[in-house]
Image (cartoon, rainbow, N blue to C red):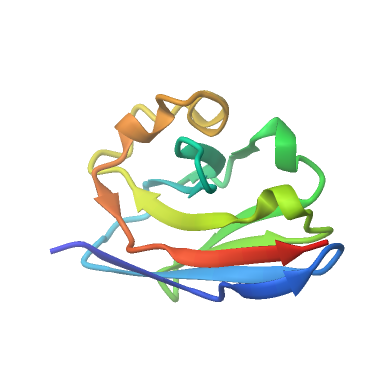
Length: 132
């Protein structure tokens, strides 16, 4: 059974940084498709960043240059480093993993509102609040 557990959320002032972690269990193999999504107050869920087993990554235009996604295979942990946070980054953040590693259209998932359909496994979310 695949389980994803996020941590690292919290409250931070604008311009600050946070690193989200997602501990993944029951998900084996070096080939994968994983991502981070978020849902702000009154907004639909949107893609933030994605990565695959080849180490390729993609991020949404709204976080480009500020957020970085990475996966530590040895620790089975997915990370989202968030720098230069803005008030509009306030949201519940979710990590997700695909049941099948292929296809994994990274840019499409990160930038299209329907990208979440590629993922079958989800964490419970961690809240990030950025105050201006």
